Image 1 (cartoon, rainbow, N blue to C red):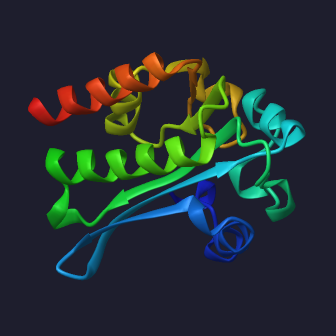
Image 2 (tube, helix red, strand yellow):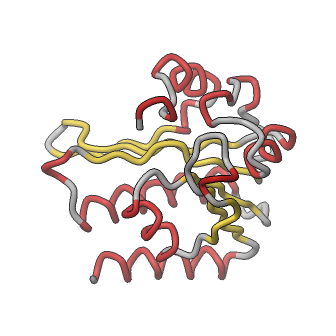
Image 3 (cartoon, helix red, strand yellow):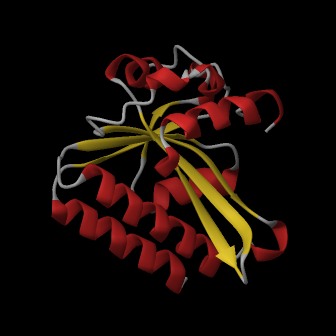
Length: 168
């Protein structure tokens, strides 16, 4: 991801503020993938949503561990030789389980995510995200997508889409 990637020290500062923000995928005790998702304060969420700041400029003190209704997914990665639908579905399902615990039925909750690849863009679209900003409109030069979960039924539909991805 080059200059758009979140530096490790920034990611570590977010994690220190919200340890539940990193979801790992394990196989035989080894980490083979991970996803990071962060509950943001209103001000930072709006800056990201409007394309005013790069993701690497999100400050640790912008991670909101109280309201948990505005989320940002920063990283999704799976080791090359484990990249398959089964691993992806396991990772996304783990993230969804964590999201459900954190939100605790306090809807609506909105998730933002940048798409750094064609595969990432296609995945976000398949699970129901909509493009908010084109790549030209964001400082990261990647399209920004959003998904709002308003009810338990919305969450159930999202789970069904995950199952659909796995069955393809």
